[in-house]
Image (cartoon, rainbow, N blue to C red; front, side, top):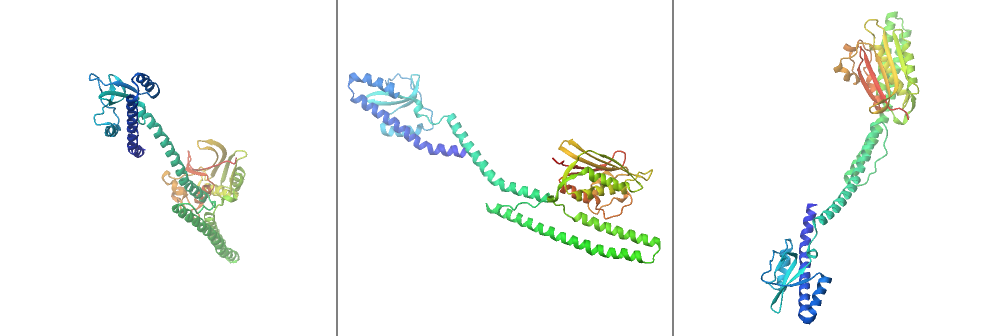
Amino acid sequence: MASWIGMISMVQRGPQAQQIAAQVISVVTITHAALTHSAPDLRRELLFELVSNEGIRIFPLEPSDEVGPPPDNTLMGDIEAIVKAKLGQDTRFSARVNGVAGFWVSFKIAGDEYWLMLERERFEGLTGFQWLGWAGLVGLLSLLGAAIISSLVNLPLARLAAAARAIAQGRRPTPLPEKGPQEILEANRSFNQMVDDLQRVESDRAVILAGISHDLRTPLARMQLEVEMAKLSIEARDGMQSDIAQMDAIIGQFLDYAKPTDAASFVPVDVGALLTDSAHEAERMLDVRVTVDIGDRVHVMGNPTDLRRVFNNLVENARRYGKTPDTELCEIDIRCHLRTLAQGERVVIEVQDHGHGVPDDQIDQLLKPFTRLDSARGQANGAGLGLAIVERVVSRHNAELNVRNREGGGLLVQILMHPLT
């Protein structure tokens, strides 16, 4: 804006000064000629005509006139030089004569000097309010242009951010348009290539997982059969069968952790029914007592198989590590209700036990793969992937997982999911 105002002022100054000077010269010359060639008895009418129609007044120049300085105008120096070059160097200028404000110019007729007074408004440039108006208009146009340019720049970035969020949620985004400026084109092309590479990696991983499941569990099945047919003592047979079952469970955990959750497979899921089934499965154990508090018609969008695995893992984790110190009985509380929280309406799922709990500074370690806090949670069998699988599936469902110690002892795992609308 400052550069624009400076440029306009500099470009405008010369032509405007020449235009005003030419107008002054023209008015003085025409007035001088009219008064010189008019009949003496008609000069009064001519002066009246000049005042009424042209705003031009003629006064005799007296030595006693109180003459003020020339108009305080940045163009006055240029105007004065041009006018004096045409009308003579003795031409005088004033902004006020005898207390009357105006644009005063002197000229001579047959040796007598006169003042010619013009209205100052016709010789003034843009006023401060006019400059402010033009500046506001230019500023508004500049902001409008900047908004259009910003939208053109931000639109590809918004598409890229939306595609990245889709990948984070396990969905394959629509390919980004490979057009526009070179930088945007390269970014979109690289992103599309990355999506294709991830898709191939996902397909390869599915094939590898299927191969691992087949190649590892087939020998385990043969080992199980050989143990059954071998002439072993009951203690040795039970021990080997336990080891084989533990190996099979560990393989299952690895496969569950590596298995992707596809958002395209999400369907309406009755969370209460899944939790009730998990509670019934746990109640079959002799050392387990389950308390269930589940609301009616609690539904979410999700993968029912993966959510069932999550709830089973939570209940199994509570069963293993949630025995009370006194009775050696595992008490598990399962709650599920629709609540209105600060972030909006959520389905709140809670699974808690009454065991020893976990040191507060080690709770974050529970969600890391291959981590078991045996010192805090007692004897553990498995690969340490139970809660890691829960955290992975919950994040793919765009839900929130909270783990904290329960008041009175034990661990509380809370899942916040978006309800089905």
